[in-house]
Image (cartoon, rainbow, N blue to C red; front, top):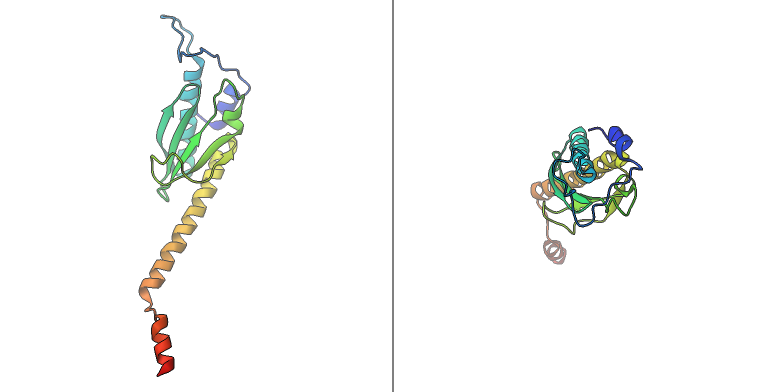
Length: 164
């Protein structure tokens, strides 16, 4: 599902609160539980966003009226944590205030600094952050190449030569 289609369908919509239940208890009811539909659509959007910027949806953790997800960059192999607030109490926060941050590995729940994005800008923001990480990796790799290819004099050798 595309971001714009998702926003058109769900923005400003009040999700039915079934309290402690995640589904209505009525068997044979044709009405689909709204939050499950919302969550399924959101997962589809994250997959689409990832596909467009070279990421994959690594995991998706369903919670009670909220969720978290882990995305992984195919370029840097960097993991990113994404989370939305409870949709019952924070209207449109799922679209206007998405938490995202870097992760050291796929199960690093504390991760890097918290950042926030709108759903419309999430792909751009993840992409910018991933490019910054790529630049840092390239700089670190070039430093390692330089350090390994050029013999380095120690300060002790310089000092001893001056005394001689």
